[in-house]
Length: 394
Image 1 (cartoon, helix red, strand yellow):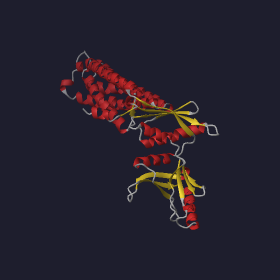
Image 2: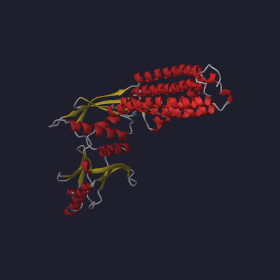
Image 3: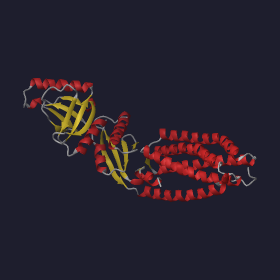
Image 4: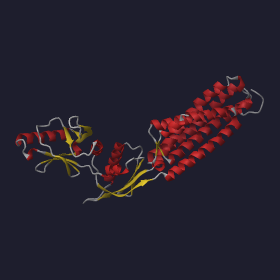
């Protein structure tokens, strides 16, 4: 009953719910595009997208000068494209054209609503170098020119467009400034503030392709995976019950707990589920079942050696522990390598596989052992035939 709400809270990837695909090309404006420019470009782009609140975006380089950005589940893809493609170069300029400071001197930018005018504005906080430059400029202009003199103004330009051109009323010594006017609404101001926090792109970019991606292909995969999982789990349940009886029932119960924990972890981590991620989950489920089969077979071996039921469970778990532990740890190492060297869907696969493996170790070892210990305290479950052994009762 708890699975439905949990599954509805899991973020779905581009291949499962659709989104926007954007391809950008770096432009050489008089100087070649370097490897360092592209590395910095990826960093700035990721920071900008993080500001949009998109989970696990796909940002990958194609060749030396191209970048592909894929964002899943955005309600307004065009707004995202505008944020991705903007240059966001901020300049504070005197009336004589001299630049006081740039966006590099910016420490923080936050959009707010002016309580007096109820209009959106952006509050800027400069680093020490920027604060000194701004203090020097405002002190100079306030002392040099009378009020209402146009030379006493400081223009604030974003991407070459004048946002505001206020007059200096007094020296501003605390390193903070406000940009007012020029915003259609609060979200417009918030988007510009996000661009300013992320910084300017190291090279000029142009969008050479953009398209809205539908979820059809991935959705088909999700539906097929759902049916495959239901059929597979039914067959698995029948096999476990026929082969192991009471332990088989316990394993199905622990698999239910396994599914709840994994779903809850994906929600808490705000992970994005993709088709490769589903593959990782299915692989971890198969490993969870495999771990239980190893444990139950060891228990059957101990029962066939005429040990008591309780002693067989304890001994069987001890004998199976390191086999199960080693198999899961080596898979975790492989998942860590995939996460470190991979990107996008590969990382999604590694994350879901790792969550599944860790949960599997808990349910296969700790939870299953506890449930079996509880079961053998019930007289009705003390027949060895109920543990898949057809020899004499323990």
